[in-house]
Length: 206
Image (cartoon, one colour):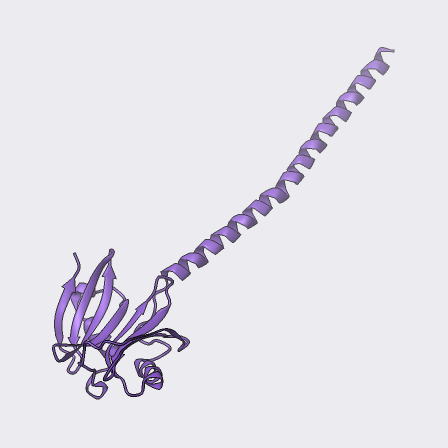
């Protein structure tokens, strides 16, 4: 009788132990896919963050935009064939879109035309009736914007920086490129004679 009782106790103990092991194994098996799923989600989030950072850190190519300055001028001339151009600016807006801002005039009006530097789309087209300027750019006498940028990049003040935009305008009868840079939220402008490439001024916004 004692032996039978002892055998029954041992049998129950073994059954209980096996049951606990099965539960532990099941718990482990249940946890494992969840861990894998979490790992996959983490990888996905990391990849998305990396892509976002790359997009945010991309620098716009103002040296070789899809639409050249000559093409932008032609687009302006299609709308206002008799107008002269007093300034051109290539810059980005708050969303990172690269665009030209062209100011022109004729005998009676002034014109402000904004052109997308990728799609050629005219974004803004404003006309003012009062004309205040009569200094026009002579495109036959100026160097290319890419050349002006190359000259500006030789200055030690902008070493290691990428240009953020440029402006071509007439100041006191002289045609001038202003190539723009930014360092630590401070602007650096380099003015270059648009006819001979001479560096005229380095303006640092402290």
